[in-house]
Amino acid sequence: MVKFYSEKCSEHATRIYGLAGEQMYLVEGTQKAALIDTGSGAGKLRQYVESLTDRPVTVLLTHGHVDHAMGAPEFDTVYMSRKDDYIYLQHCELEVRKRFLSQSPKFAEVAEEDYIPVAEPDGFLDMEEGDVFDLGGVSIEIYACAGHTRGSVCMLIREERTLITGDACNAFTFLFDAYSTGLSTYEKNLTELKAKTAGKFDRVYLSHGPGRDYPAVLLEEVLEVCEDIKSGNVDDVPFESRGRKAHIAKALTKEGGRPDGKLGNIVYDKARIEE
Image (tube, rainbow, N blue to C red):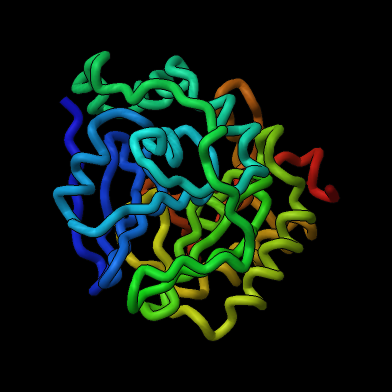
């Protein structure tokens, strides 16, 4: 049986851990709640969320990947950028979910009945930059940041001065898949995100990693990596995932961080730097 775990990370937000370590966020206002991302589609996530809040829950998806969006069909109201329909449709298949979860040491805990049935995104509502979800005393504002996927978005919890980046910008940003943008397009989009959110947040919540707050400087440090890639100031550590070869811009320590202590890193395709 799949079990979820959670911890309060602020007055209004709770971090929920999925089977493979993916992190979701339940944000509660006085009238409504929003669940940001839904994990990999194994386990009774809705039942768990309803044990944490008695407010009606709306799902907001940062993007359509297997480890972020596959629990969404359990919920009645789901928002996702329709630009990510293409990747959701690839990742929602049961075998894709199983391959992803097989990387988790807890994979043996998953029974066939734990998998949420496959569902297409036809019933999802579109989400665009500028949308605001008022939960009652707490609001979430949407910002587009295409790169990791075409429809990737970040979400600002205004009153808590917190930016949730999904996989759009993190300590190990994937930018090498066929469905990702090229590096230059991503840099442009991330630069615009940084400008639009300047002065509005003090911390960042990520969807992967040790489950902690990250400083706002994360965006700036990922942009520095973009510039280092373009100038050739990189370590170019070979990387391969699902048969696709790429390079990690900055070398990693045994713990997975950078030797210089900076936070940003990018896994990229050398052939698509100028795109």
